[in-house]
Length: 473
Length: 163
Image 1: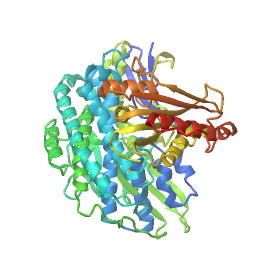
Image 2 (image 1 turned 90 degrees about the vertical axis):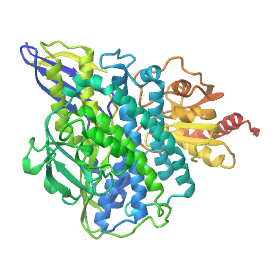
Image 3 (image 1 turned 180 degrees about the vertical axis):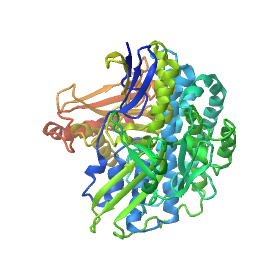
Image 4 (image 1 turned 90 degrees about the horizontal axis):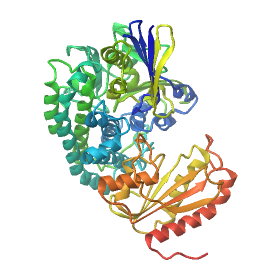
C-alpha cells in the first residue's frame, strides 16, 4: 500500500510550511511537495495607497529582511518619480542592505543550520538547536550572535530601529550619516572579521563530512540569476540581472528592473501559496532557476573585495562550472557575510559618506515603475502602477523564495527518493529532508507576503491518499 | 539611544504596537527614553520579540529591566519581580526567548549577567489587531509610569522621589 509522509511543520525556517512525501506501493518515493501554507495579500491591499507610502508598507512583509523590501520598493517609486538618488544616499542604502544581509545570514547559518552541521543530522533533536551549539562549541554560537548583533546594530544606527526602519524613502534616505555613527560602526568591524573568519575556518574543516548530503541536497543542473556589476562583480543594491545556465553560459544579461517582467514569468501550483518564477523563453518548469548566495557566487567573476575574492576562488574550485549542490549555499552565505563586512568598511571610508545631500524629490512623472535588489535569499523585484495622483492601482512582488520554489521542491524530492526506501525512515532522515529546504533559507512570510510563525511539518501519504505518518514540530 | 558602551541600566521592552495592549512595552520604553534623557548610562531597546543576540546587550549592562505584558494576570495590574537566571536553556525558541532564558544565554556566552534583573509586567486585557490600548490598560498607564520611574531609579542607584 502506498503512503504519504508529512513533515508539518518544517522547523528552523522563516515562516510556516509543510512537506508531503508520497510513496508508491513498494514504499519508495514517488513525489514530494514543499507547501507554503499561509497567505496575506500585500499586493492587493496596497491598491489605493499613495506610492510614497509603499516602502514602509512593504517592509512590513518581513521582520528578517525588511530592508530589502524598503530598497526595492523605494527604487520602484524612484522609477515613478524619474529621479536618480544622490551618490551618498546610494552608498548608505547599500550599507544598510549589506548590514541586513549579514544579520539575516547569521540567523540562517548559526541559529538555524549550524545545529545540523555541528551536532550532526542524526543527533538528538532535543539538543539539535542553537542552544545545543552553545554547549558543544560556544565560540561558534557566540560568533553567530555577535554577527547578528553587528548587522542589527548598523541597521539601528542608520535607521533608528532594528526592524522596520523608516529611513529609506523614495528619493534616498531621510537623514545623513553622522560622524559619530560612522566611527562607531568602524569600531565594530575588527570583531566582525574575527567572527566570520572563525566560522569560515570551522565550516571548511567540517564540510567534507557532509559529502553524502552534498550529493543529494538539491544537487542538479539549473539556471542561476542575480544582480551583477558591469565589471562582473557581485552587487546587492544596483547593477542589473544576469541569468546563466548550468554550464555557466550567459542566458540573459543586463536585465533591468523595467525589463524583468518581460523575461520572468510566475507559475502557480495547487499545493502552495508561493508562486514559481521562471525564465519565459524556456517556459515553466524548464525555465526555473535559483537565486541567493549560491547563484550570486556562480554568476560573479569577483566579489570586488580582497578577502571575499580569496574565498570566491576556493568556492569556484568546488566544481568545473557553476556549483550545483544547494548544500553549498552554506559556504556561499558565509562568503556573503565576509563580503558584506568588507564592503561596509569600504563604504564608511568613502570621502563623501558624510555628505548631507541624501535625498532627491519629485512627484509622479511616470505611471509605472519597477525596482530590484538582492535580498539575503536572492533577487527581490517590486513593480507598481499608479494613477495620475500617484495612488497605487496595481502591484506585483517577485520574491527570492518564489524564484527558488521549483528548486526547493526538486531538492526535497531528490533527498526523499535517496533516503526513504521501502517505506522506512527515521527522524534523522526527515531532518535531512527539512535541511534541504533550510539550505535555501526560504522566507515564507516574504514569499506569500504573509504573517506567520515558523514551524513546518512532514506528511507520509499512501497511494490511496491515506495519511500514514506525520511529524509535527 | 544608540551606543555600545556598558549601560548602567538596560531597559529591554517587548511587544507589538499593532496588537493593542501588547504595545505597552514599546510605549513605556519610549516614554522612559524621553523621561530619563538627562540620565547617563541608560540604554533602551524595544523589540517585537526577545531574540538570542540580545544576550550580548544584557551581558554588557550592569542592570536590566525587562518590560512585557501578560494575559495571565488581571488587566491593568502591575507585577515587578526579580528574574532568576534560567537553569536550562530552551529547546527550539531561536526566534524568541523569555527573560530568564536570555539571562542564561548571557551567562553561557559571555560568562556574566547583570547584577540585578527585574521583570516589569502589565496585565493585558486585549491583544487584538489594532493600535491603542484597552480601557483597563489606559487607566493603568499613569501608575505604570510611576512604578517604572521608581524601578529604573532604583536600578540606577539614583534617589527615588516620593509622590
